[in-house]
Amino acid sequence: HPAGYRIVRVPVAAIEGMPAPGLVRLGRVALRRIYAWRTGTPYRPVPPLGSVPAPSSPGGASSAAVTSAAATGAGAGDEAAAAPTPGTGPMASLPRRLASGLIRRLSIPLTIRSQVVASRRVAPAADLYHGMAYMGIPVALDLARRHGGRVVYDARDIYVDAANLARMPRTLRWLVGRAERRWARRADRVITVNRPYAEVMARRWAVDLPLIVMNCAYRTTPPEPRPRRFHATLGLDPATRVVLYQGGFSRDRGIEQLIEAIPAVPGAVLVLLGYGSLQAELEARAADPALGGHVRILPAVPPTELLDWVASADVVAMPIQPTTLNHRYTTPNKLFEAMAVGVPVVASDLPGMAPTVRDADAGLLVDPTDPAAIAQACRTLLDEPADVAAARRARILGAAHATYNWEAQMDRLLAEYGRLTGRPW
Image (cartoon, rainbow, N blue to C red; front, side):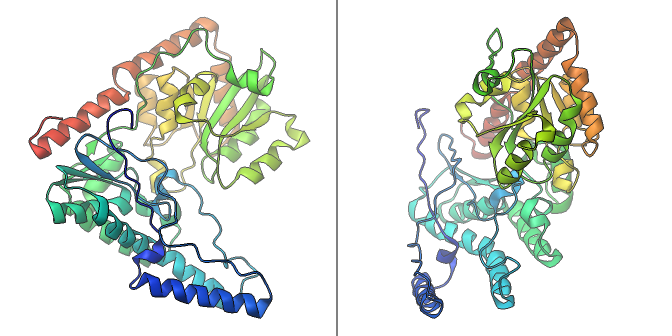
């Protein structure tokens, strides 16, 4: 990486975590050939071992070995809805549905095991291993046991109460939670992203209060005049105001409530910037004539360009729904990205993000389940007089520069690395 660290990608698949994965693969080949012969359908080759793409957000830091979770079950932080599993639809036979369900549940421990084995072959001895998420920490612990070094568990979500895991049977969630507690207690330090998460983790795992390192954006100074990327890309009238939702297109993010709210916000359009499992459904809703073109969808943009797009919005909306403990306590990245460029937010009045919004005077808090309340908050911010709006943006940007920025958070993290290793970072 141009910043000076080296990224080593370790592609793995759940099958590689099984005993004798080669024999398992041969069995899958045989079963697929028999199925193709019996049904008269084309044979679908079994992907070769190690062909699964590596995680798309690698990281690294100085002499630390950084491990990250694979896509199979580590998406709890994303809250992304799981893609449909082949063989689980309503037309699938009962045996196929049962088999698919079993495979889906076994994929998490098998992927973890395959990551452990694969990482042993490539990871060097390190001063510190930073295990990201509940699928990354067992890899970090294994490497530290083999090579020495300290271990940090980076728990960015309350995983057993988030996304796919929250929908699993109680017994399986208990097993994952018990394993995570054991891993957290073996780590030299637990870190997380906000105080509510830290308090839950300290209580559940009987560990010291985790270090809080917020997922802030880098300090930046938005250009003046503000960019108008949405107006240029979508051909909007210059007077049109933009309410932006950016992030994953999945359930419980408040997208549906925003779509209901936007017709009650005169002179505004809702722009959905991102991608995800709801894409087709959202495109169909956006095309509804009843919405009069007030909902527009754009694909995700490169991270290096994201802040310029966010700065082009008039309001950033994040009415995340209080459907899980993880959602109620979340402080989403999009909150800090909006603050980084001084754009006010309409956010859920929930224990996770509300204190930050109030502290920075970053916008308005609403009942996220109420589209009328969301619409009213958007109207209030959009209709502020120019001098009031400019003063609010200045306050938000000031808070971002003073406190809510990655430079300040990174100092906390590197100081902890130094404390754990006795070496300067």
